[in-house]
Length: 271
Ligand code: BGO
Image 1: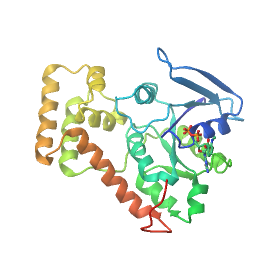
Image 2 (image 1 turned 120 degrees about the vertical axis):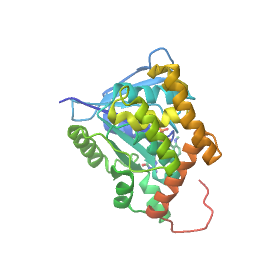
Image 3 (image 1 turned 135 degrees about the vertical axis):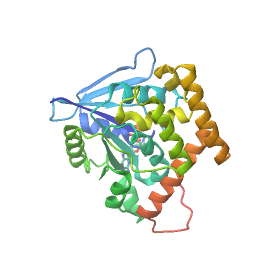
Image 4 (image 1 turned 90 degrees about the vertical axis):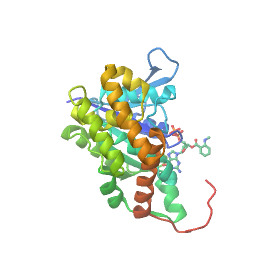
């Protein structure tokens, strides 16, 4: 069985270091079709049947930058067998923003909690078991720089790919938002694959033009979705994109509160 792993993560999370450590010299470097954004692919060392696709560094799966669009098109259309999400553990709160989106795609996710050497040096603690439970996916402590945790990471990624169980996100947004998402899902149920439903309903809620275009919804359906979205905006007194962003950060601060123990609580850190 050949396995396709996608590497996703924020810029500076250590993705290049990780990609180089995992693939060694077996790399193919080109461009994504039609654009000058670098496309890097390689074979996992010692596994001729495992391909690793290095996606551009991104903060979000919104439609606003070329890197985001390339990454999300690849993930939604090519559906790799598993995503390794590289999270800079030293900046965990910011990095989990992308994680909350990757876990909505229906593709198995394994989180590489990278830069753990920095977290250890600071004397901070992250409860991996709890984090894994709250995110609903495997979490592996790594240091790409020191080559630590990489075998365990790829073993878990290969196992998740072989199991082929679609990822189901753990977080729920507040009731008004979940209600709106459910109503949207009911309208598009025959056009969207069940495992990708969360991704599509959130994007439709956000009025994502690229997704609206891709699904080729007729005007009647579009206006039904629009009235669901504007009703929810009225209830929460905010625009739909900001509503989702706030919901993600609420969820993340809840996760951080339960998993991160800072040594110097209250002290300002320079990072
Ligand atoms: C420099 N631990 C630590 N401590 N550092 C790491 C780890 C880790 O686990 N993984 C990566 N780094 P990229 P993106 C650098 O380049 O892979 C470091 O953008 C420097 N360079 O070595 O490039 C890695 O691909 C001079 O650091 O990230 C790199 O995701 C001084 O994180 C940086 C200090 O890694 C970003 C660091 C000339």
